[in-house]
Length: 616
Image 1 (spheres, rainbow, N blue to C red):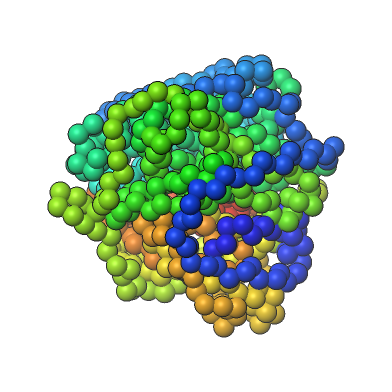
Image 2 (image 1 turned 90 degrees about the horizontal axis):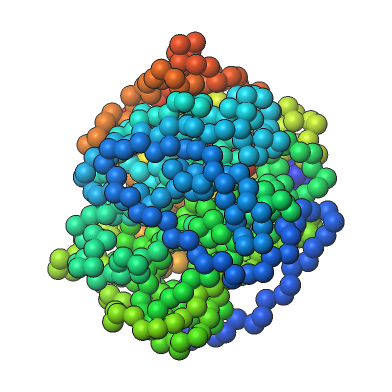
């Protein structure tokens, strides 16, 4: 995939729902061998317009990068609570949410095959983003402004339905779920975040997210780990989130001034970048090797990460664990909810050197039309002093004392085609752009629910007919990318006109391919749980559904609604308000299984999420 191509969206999403055809994306290209480091030219200053919200002018690199504490998990209570946080030296403090701290959450550290029992409790006050709660979303009411719901999803975790954080089972102040994480999977960088239906995008933006390190006998986190990876102070999480601020220091989730307050605007793009909750921070590093666990925790923005001096990343892992060997690359395209496990070698840089981590992704066409500033700066590294001798390991899997090599791509037991589509939403006629996104032309609450068989491998061909790139996430499943192939979407639409919304639309697009399938970049060949599906493209992936033994439970068991919880009945509907969340004593919904959805959180809330049942 040519990472420098502009990404289209937003405005064309509104046009696309009227059946407008789109020209296809350029064909992807195999990743070449990384070139020698070449400094990046100075970045242009952003353009500001009166049509959009903008943060006050803030000086970059004046605040140190905060590094979250790491807490070993076994059995504990984590309280989601109000806090007060200052995002930048020159911004006032503001109300935020966090897991046991004012903003975000601690790094939770678990070990493979060691059960972790964690209870989460909602002690949140009024929503910091209360004016932006959208009452047209599934189950959302005025109460979500003053006593908001929450739940917690361990993103990438192989867990029972009851411990997965289903978006239809939520808790208000005083309540909360108790989960059992069996951790029956390899070491990986997971993360935990809110997943409440209809207000997820606001809850995460307010601060409900954190990293979850899963260790094993190879990646122990100790200095003597068998893989020879940096540990301790040289292993650092980087949670990257774009944000816009008001002059009083509070978050401004809106992009455009001409969209009324209180509507999901189909995307949130900030004009500053926060890392671990601080705007454009600086990290003092020593002349040695560092390991960075990088998470794109933004609501909507993808990034192409590069260093300002052209130095290389050495990718050692993806969402679900390690690669066979480090992959050197000068740039990385990371979409929402994806994680990359990186080694960065500062040993050859002189004391006093500063290196910027920047974003070279271009705005899509819609954001160009709306004059949304592109976001370039991410953070800065300042080199000072020697560090311990360290080297990049040549091999991570497949050798003596190492985990087994990645298996070859399996022959699938089943082939599916799924479509991503943009539509008008008649229930939101008051909105300036009454658009919505959907999978297979179906609402979230539909009786047309897919089923899968535990222990099987499926091939999913995801046909993206929208002008957005969508980061698609499957709960429970482990994924491998087969490849991506551009299509002529206009011809696909003409040959297969979508039926009325609510009727499945998932025809093969193979006949409309514009070129050969291109393999994933070398650093994307490992196990994943979130895959970017570019516009006008078939993205082919393998989906492995774990066995009941790997899950530690029946994956199709009904999800219990304990006292204190609220649940929405999964009754099929095409009305996006979708019913009400009711206390457990007043409802007895038969909620089962898992979900797969877009991890652009504004899309996920409306209506790009589907349920799937995994049967033993």
